[in-house]
Length: 320
Image (cartoon, rainbow, N blue to C red; front, side):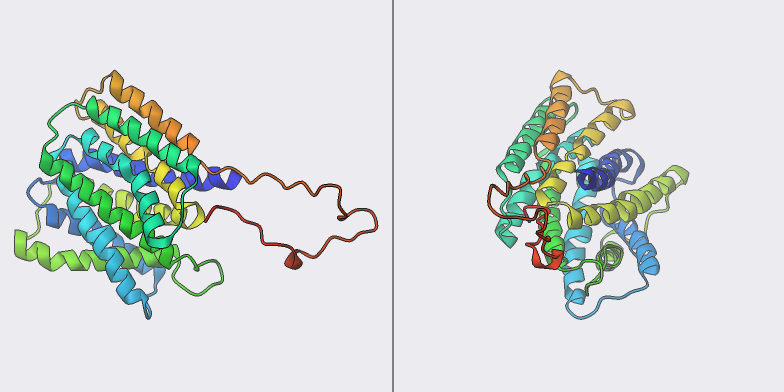
């Protein structure tokens, strides 16, 4: 439980940063440059992390990083940018509250990892809370914005599950990329995929003023470099379904910032929905396995040495 609280708190930084990013994008970034907005979010963050990692992909990790960069970076960032511009900040964040069920289902379909009943229940409670928040939301909810949010949800869920699956064997001392390197590769290759498309479709990059420059800095350094590092670290150390439930902090942050800074006015239904979101996270958290009862049979005791650890059954730390 202590490990869950530690890694859960660290992982929670990502959805909080992403929830705030909806407000930042909606109010401070140019609405007519989604491709450049996504490029300037991904490429500086990726190059910064690549300089820190000082490592390039090898073998299969070239095409894997390209696939993950296309899903988790290029497609996801463009769709999130559009959703943030077309919807109120709180509403755009609420749609992403479907991420727990999306991650569970994608993990089940793509890797065969079946969520526990409590995690399904926690996801359902959280989605119910998100539905209440969306029903009580203020501002227009156009079909284009909702479709962009749902598209972002789909591509990111598939990308996160593939990233977890491909790095499942990567532990301390094992071959394979670490969190820093794999995150840097995804962001850099995703940004490089976006760069020529943005130049051809939107012309020269926008010239931000002081406020927009700060907003781009937050989007790239905090909501991307830092947030993706802690998110992928959490995916490696916590069950996928649990990380998805922690992601429910995304819509809560979006709604609260939209109310506090953006002039949006949440009603009783949205506050009730927030309570359900928190309840869903608590319901779906991993429980420690109960200690097995050795019974009256023979076992270690006075005069009976315990078997060495290498001879005992491996300890299971999660359902995955």
